[in-house]
Each structure stands twice: as C-alpha cells, then as structure tokens.
Length: 241
Image (cartoon, rainbow, N blue to C red; front, side):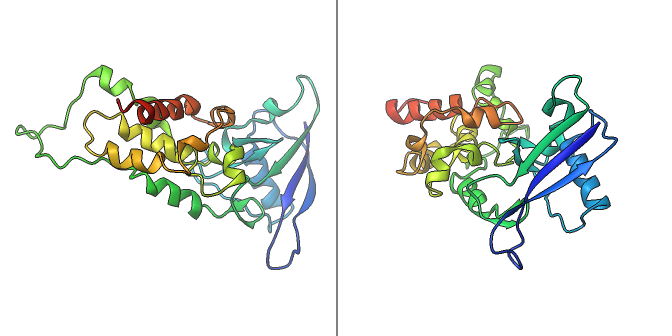
C-alpha cells in the first residue's frame, strides 16, 4: 500500500509561517499505525520532522494530533482506518492539535493545558486519620461506579483541543480539567469537593461548555466527557453531589 502524507510543518527558528510538507511512503502495511509511519518518515526521509511520542500503546497520551481533521492518538490510529476498503492508496493529513502554541511541527506547548489541570486540585484530599487496621479507605461498588469512567483520562489533551470554546478563549479550563475534577468531586472518600466546584463553577469553568460533543468523540479512552461535564453542572445547580 502507498501512503501520501501531508504534514503541517513549522520551525520558528527559520519559518515565518507554517507550511505543508508532502511525503510518500511505499510498501505500507494497513495494520501499521500513523505513529509507525511518522517514525519511518523521520528515519528514512526527513530527520528534521519533530513530534512527541513515548509508549506507543495508547497509555501515555503524548502523541495526540489532528489526523484527517480529527483529534486522535497517532499510535492508536491504523492506516486501514483512514483509507477506503480495498484501496491501494491512502491519503493522510496531519496537523498539531489546536488551541495551544506550536513549538515545532507537531509539538505544542502543553503548559497552559497542565496549568488548567493543576487548578482543579487533581489529587486525593482526606485529612482524617487512616483506618485503624491499616487498610485503605474502602468504598462501595456503587460509590466507585459514580466516577469510574473519569479515572481513565490519560491527559492527552485531545478533548480540550477539540473544543471550540477552548479555541475561542484559552482561559476556559477545558474538558480534561473538568474530567479530573469530576473524578474527585464524586469520590465519596474525598473531602475537598467544594474547593474544586469553586474552580469549575467560575466564569471560565463548566458554563463555557456548549455541549457540542467534540470532546467525547475525540477521547481515545472513550470517556463520556460531555456527560461528566453535565454531571458537574448539575451539582453546581442543585448543590447536591
């Protein structure tokens, strides 16, 4: 199979503006991932191509990018998914995720994203003495189920950078941060839901969400992001967790 790749390139040290680089790879296996192709391209044709990746197994979340117009993890996106069945040629367009400053080629500055993440206190808070028997703080299966879905976030930023509200104003805390807040707000063992609700209930919190569902569609972990945001809105509106 032949793959024609169109990649958004930009090197701030020498380029005045971004441009499209076009490349062709032959003898591609349909079961190869987009990350496989990018690594091959970098090794065989253009060593200056810059991208971010690590585990290559959909766990670290570092290789989120726009592939054919949608946010995806390059390591989880197979070539076969991007072409027509039976076709011997596939066209792939790759760009950096939107809403964050491009540092070089497909690498963006993740600091603003992580600043929003840190703002919701994404850690367990419980100042009560631990159980006398030394065991962990247990909870029921039903209590765990309330936030189980939002524990799956890998902080790839695919949801936040697919959100038009975030594109419009980077002060919006974004879907990923709200997912992290949800995980702890609904944890029956945690003692700081009010502090987190104050953050996500702010002007640039959950009320900026327009329920477009881009975030849910973009999530590589299939988290029901829009549902989680709606549940946080409901708590803010009713005062009941």
